[in-house]
Figure 1 (cartoon, helix red, strand yellow):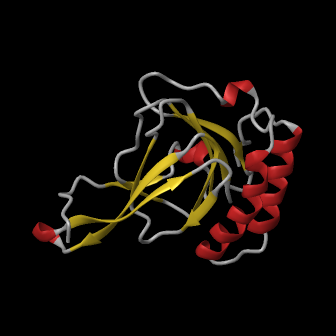
Figure 2 (cartoon, rainbow, N blue to C red):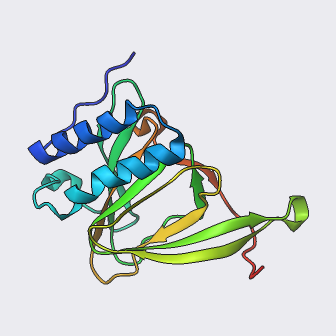
Length: 184
């Protein structure tokens, strides 16, 4: 097995990684793992000095992903995402369960349902959610189609925990959706 890349952990990050590891070791269903990890992440989101400066740097062109931790056995990763105003993801779903926690600012999320098949396939907006500072939510495929954006006028930083090794995969995205969006 290739060793995970060296990453800089603050004491709080090390504590967060340990808390996530404790949940992942329970080997629960993906949905239950996401729910439990969200419960572990949330208390860390209000703690100052969780992220060192290198994980808080953004990119003027697109949201930036910083891999904070990749578990050596590939069972989970912790990623800091930094969003400048107006930056967003394409509509996508994920390779594994995911937990999102907002550290600074607010992420705006639009969730979709996939309806129809083949030529009639379309996305229907299912919910618009604003995830504010200190909040965490989790989900697991299938049915995790969404778009996330920074609708704020300042930088947004979020912590994402994925049930996969993002340092090897490069992304948590399973599929991008380029389908019509309809009201029903």
